Image (cartoon, rainbow, N blue to C red; front, side):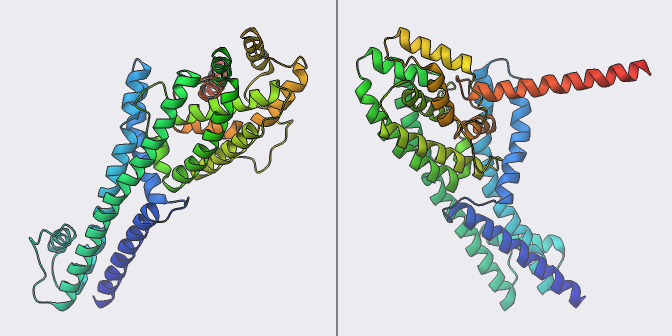
Length: 371
């Protein structure tokens, strides 16, 4: 029995240690790390909310359902930490004295919540375990209390910029709308302020959305807006601006580089597989026809669009290829609302995949019928 007691105690220590380490790495360690427990909790919640969202009739209803996923996952993660600590200390209390599992569970639950409804008595080891578990429970609560304001501060700052962009690039946002609106109001020179502002925004986005990966799943108050489609509109606007105008604007180029670096970092934090290196000749999700239509629209609005469309397309594709896969992938990950040249690409990919599956199934049915 001594061996069993030691084994139970060691297992309990490992559960508590791993749980506490997960909490510290999630809340305190400011870097992107692969954490199993938060991923499992979020995936479990998404398995409930996604099917419900798929049965809704309108996008607004779908967005409302999806909006509950990240907050519920965050609360459930905190409860999971507490539950695992309680489970971990239960075999420790069972091992140190001859008591039942139910009594050990009662003491562990009393200690982690600091209720004091059950104690070990005058036993020194048991009392020490009670104090340690109570301290761990208080630390977990303190971490959660400090974590929530930090995360919601990052969310609030992000959404202020999303709303700022909605006035300038429309809802849903579009890079073409951005250039057209600034030209119509005679503020093309003010685009430099946009590139500078969003270069800094992308830097902050990379920091917050890799340190606290769950922030990416928090949805905008407006169902038609999203941080990722806003990012796509800014990057497309900068890429179009550099492609169709003869003068190279260094601010737009810096904004692009900051943007695609941020999106690739965030995509990596969400375990999206991206190529290590890209080439200007690699395919992108925007077609040449769509690019020509955008150029025609901007030319009709009065912008000085270059006549060398082939060169302009090559330049645009060379810029877009740097962020294309990350943008489309993140739109699919966070179920972004419809927006041109970003989330509509992921929807198109999903539809193509479903058509392929259906064709494959029909082919199998025909073969079985022939038999």
